[in-house]
Image (cartoon, rainbow, N blue to C red; front, side, top):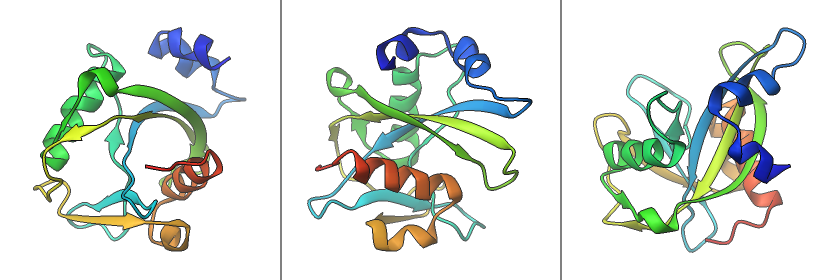
Length: 153
């Protein structure tokens, strides 16, 4: 099933996972954990909640290309292209509207450089399960999904 999902074009995945009128969109995320098994989150300007790295892919880019570009822009590091690998996906409601369901496709990848705040990601945080209350609905689902799959780096 996962391999079949990965091979579907983005628009088909979005249609395939919509349920009974729920609006579904796809997001891609980078799983970045420190040596204490805490996951990278960031705060955006004028936002209280913490968010996990990633975003909505652009139609003219592959998910891997978009993720590499987004992470470089937001965190000042370069993902090593040969190490970017799809790991899992999950579905979660969005904070803006609980009837809007997103599919989050999560990737693991090594990086080169030092993580640093940028204009978009003004403060970086590493969170374990005890800090998930500081995140969005999707962020809590991201933490639960990662730890249920045994994220170890």
